[in-house]
Image: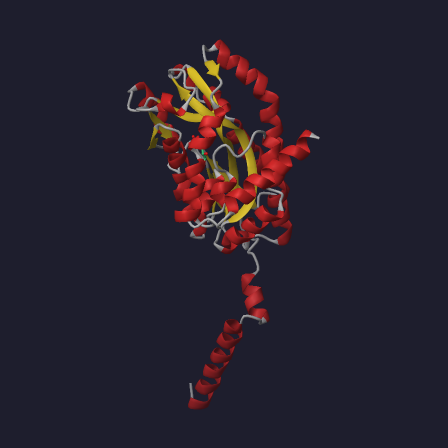
Length: 349
Ligand code: G3P
């Protein structure tokens, strides 16, 4: 190549890279267009067993997405902690992997700390209160902030029941928990709450929990009625103290990078199906409550009420700590409690 040709070629390369680097050029937009010539394979991870509704719902939702996108969006479900879960699942998403994490919203609190009080202890008395709360402008704003941190939220309402204490003795007050070790998922919110309630929390994946109770490494666990039935907790724990200290709910989280690999039409299908699936699951869970409760009684489980006022008092410090040491907005817990009180009153009308 002579010098002139070489110089022309060089300036063409420089011009092309400048266009691409400027951010507004057609070339960049063309490069960012989703490649629809091959399936987009995304791994979806959760900890639930095949018998639990959340597992079934994820299969239903992802099947519908596969059908409606003619196989283009291929979301493959991995349950029971086969791949990264809990905090590590969220981290996969935040790092931009083609990964969907289905977890308790407290893990989003590692990126936007206000998610911790949103699902804090003793916050809700009914599923509907939470469902209405996540529709408020306050929570919508938090959802936007999470996306800016690399966690796009497709749903927050895959509800799987209130969480109680599942043990082998009657627990009514925080004093009754003294000296007891209880398994919790490895979420700081869960650990802090169970410690504040009077027990000693042991963080452990669910898959190891029932054998740990059998081996007496822990004295019990905290979990929902539906998990109790679905995973046969009743075989190792016969008492349920109905603290309802958390509403068991999972959100669905995806990376904005993976999201950008879908066309707007595909994004709409995925968003609509995950939104629909949450409502569908909550309805199914509500309908299944009586059967589940009856079955647990048949399996020899005894339920007892607790001193809710004493447990409410005990967990106050969990909220204080979120604001003082964990980056939650000052005053947010009070604001959220007030918002829930308003919702509660409106639901009672
Ligand atoms: O993030 C999912 C979590 O809330 C499920 O709890 O007790 O089944 O590990 P667990």
